[in-house]
Image 1 (spheres, rainbow, N blue to C red):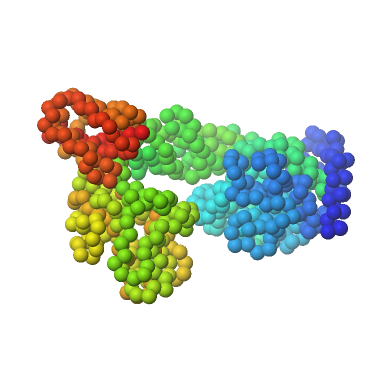
Image 2: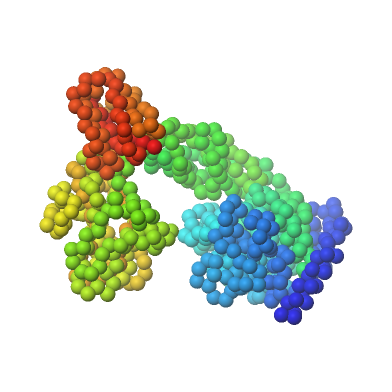
Length: 622
């Protein structure tokens, strides 16, 4: 404790009196290329005094405290910081230092951005505070010794969005993963790598080996240092994420701590002066064959053929309706959050790291589909209201389906049948409270998340057209829901999530109860159900029936009144609740305009018949 206090006192004293001298870089004036790099190596090596690996935690108090985002003085960790919202967790200096870890947020430790295994944990690299930064221990563990790079397909993502996965570009001779920080800190890490390539110029050529991620990172030279693919990536990160005030303050604090600075924070222009001596003026070729697929009511998947470039394509700019939408490093993008039944146009432009831009690709036009109706929807997040949609029936055993406010997807609510330690075989049902009105829809689809652990007992998803809604369901006819089959558990104690997405259940011909049937006659299983959704398209028996033939207004309504206006006489109106229960029916009215009054708050479906044409519209009463 005395040593820690002494070091803190020294640090505070240095911080008061020591600054990066105004003439610190004077000897580099007028130089460029590798001559500049060599002179910077001399400058930042002189005065560098390692404070030792153990004292890095002390240094972090001045170099890595959050006075830029939450402004709360907690540890500023590039792997957990959320620049635009609340951090998933925070660490306080001096507490929660790793140690072992099992989850994000357990503890923080010291991350060597250039892993210490690359240089056999030699000094002063192993304790250089410019490149050894505080990070969450779990994320540090997942990054391991991987090279940095842009991820094409992620196989793991941290809570703040840092990713591990397959590289977005081909890396010659390398088939492993890369690690990608969030955009906010890409420039920070790139400038640290340029610092390391300069400060340890005399040693770094020997760091390239088959050891972990060093082989695809280094090219075995002391001047160029990096493989071309990585240099392109680092320059682009450096260019697109300019030096921030946080970096400037950290650089000053690091100088106060160990006596040297990162020149690429003070002079970011030197990166191009050293590593891009022959300016790249060649534009990439235009991306080709832009196509749109999997068009839904609110999304579309775009794919294209890669562009080419003399150095390398860095990113693709995706434009929607002539406005820049996003930039991606892969040759595909899914645009979501679109408006139903709306036209959109897309094209793509390639760019390199300078950046030089290509010509535009071909333009692809799409029209989103009509929004599907929700025949049934339950997210299980509110146990108090689930009984309005689902009811549990215990046919046998002392177990039952039970609602829990957590344990589901993203720790949200679920309905669970836990057969563990059952005294007698279970026979338990979870059934929709009302029949689902499949007869009012076409193209019906079911989505649900099933979670199982322990045991070997399956969960059957079935429907019945003759169940009465209150009696023992075993006395009625139940049929397997088409195209929906649950996993067969293998007896392990690991939770397995089975996501069934848009399964075609249009084979259910009429209104029917839907049920989750759990019968146990062997090793019991714990089953959970989450996010149950059934969608469909409203029925119309004339395919080209125009929507403008019928107007329903106001929708939504705030005065409990809805008016239905047809361009010819309306012959019949039926009003249904969201669960398919008929509320009102009006026949043979022979009018073009009908008003429904005194409607309770909620969502309804109106079935309208005009000249033997059936149309269903969704309305909302607020």
